[in-house]
Image: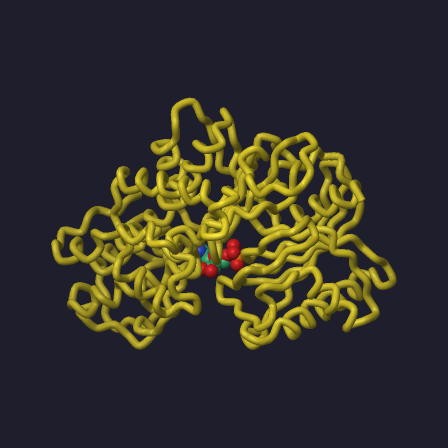
Length: 450
Ligand code: ADP
């Protein structure tokens, strides 16, 4: 439920820039389509910001995949190692999360991959896999230019990672070298995919109308099935099906200024203080890594103008990154006037004085910012659906922002419906364990072909 508008002009003036019109969203879809086509074009790809990487994944699973596979999932908050047994439609899975300490996220590539190899070793030891050579699928969710299913060159780190000596290198090679250095274990990495492809593959396993994978988590990205005739740089085979999954890397949309007409001063501040200024502009307006911080900046401004908390914030509220995106979900989950979650967040942030009116205002701010994010993502999905022009498409969605925000799904269904060409039907499906299951499915298909 949309909170009642706050009857204070001063507040409305501060938050108004987050409210965009359908015309804005349509304008955005047009320029997005141009970006997609530029990325797909032979002559234009080199200068395109939205990279439209070919993934070399041509078919979705047919449900006959079988065998035991290892999968790795690296791409944001957690690093996981998984053991996956596929037997037709049946999937069994065991997994373990390993922490990647901050000093490794910002350290050297050798350290990162040695750490990964050590985690695989521990996992194999704990799961009685020593001495076996299992085929492995690697979900590596950073922008990579692929040269084949098992060759992926990192173009640039995103989402808080910055390990020296990895950009420009093939991550499968780095992984195999680290495993060699570690000794005592053997793995055979057959495929690199990213989390969007994992989500798509995992849903397609049970629903073959699935043709888009979408991530709304730490970052945002989407992939979709494109006809080979539209992929001007395609250098793989032309066997049936004449299609390939394209990893759009749409987080970089707007890096050429296309989103400047909707950017707010808060978006600019978030960007300025990020480790990749000027990059991932669309992602920074949508995803979980940044949403809480956008809200925080607005609250700090409202507080400064004496419009909330009696003008008295707290050191916590003034601390960059301290307003977590999960707070947005919690605050918007308050459905009555008791504001239980909202007050709890204020306590967490050590705000000395707060009123029910403050709760209403803060809820309103959260709502506007998450709604803008949901609508921006919807414009991207509507653009892809219109481009694909299939009559009926399931969209596989994964990521904590989509999963846990109380209204994200409904907001997206509403806005996509408004922006879609007539005659196209779609569904948003929550993808379960896409990064693990998807990687195993792609490895299984590759293993069969080998
Ligand atoms: P990944 O890092 O692989 O994208 P997730 O999909 O779990 O992993 O996304 C983590 C991000 O989701 C975090 O950056 C956080 O901001 C956001 N997040 C975590 N919990 C919630 C929540 N309850 N509501 C909204 N966003 C959340």
